[in-house]
Image (cartoon, rainbow, N blue to C red; front, side, top):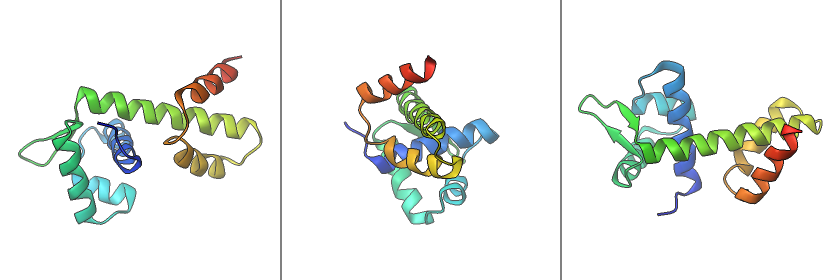
Amino acid sequence: MSLHESGQMYLESILVLQRKSGAVRSIDIVEHMGYSKPSVSRAMGILKTDEYITIDKNGYITLTEKGKIEAEKIYERHGIISKFLIELGVSEETATEDACKIEHVISDESINAIKKHLEK
């Protein structure tokens, strides 16, 4: 199944929160993303059904291997695009905002070309 942009954003947020504090619950995602509790709850249900996350009896969310791979892919894309835009002279704030939009639609070919260019 192909993951939609919103699902990718949730997975990336879970990854960031896990790296920051280790344990993640729905309320942490609500606060981090600024979404409503019902929206986050619905999204977590979908991600769980699609086996991107697990949720334990205490409400702690963990990325599955499948979820971790997807989250890290999006997170890496974000970093590559941000860095590239900053090197082009875009402000860090704008580069970060634009990267958040671009990371979901850019092709693997294009992101790999940008990555290769940055490594030079």
